[in-house]
Image (tube, rainbow, N blue to C red; front, side, top):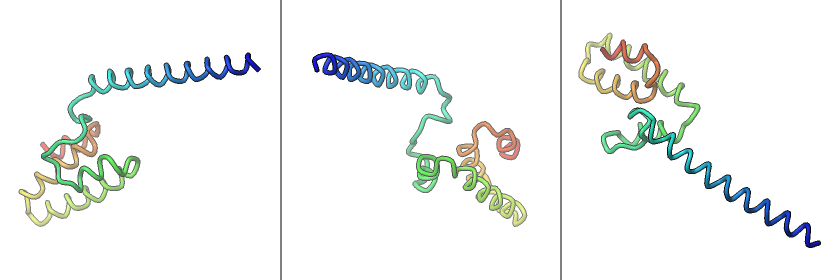
Length: 104
């Protein structure tokens, strides 16, 4: 019985230490990320913040919808809206080179 208590206490201590270490490592990794992954900024509209944080894996679908809209805006000659939309696309897909080429 005493041995089981010691094993449970040791297991609890190891899990607690692992959780602490994991949080510390995540903070170190987050500090080294580029500005595109910094998280919330006040300049973003709430809809874009929702897409960045809430949709997770569905960000690709949202970016495809924005790409379709960007093409339509370019065909219509509405370039001022296109600049804002391109900025949103670069926030959604910071590593996609096509996004940066299109915005240039």
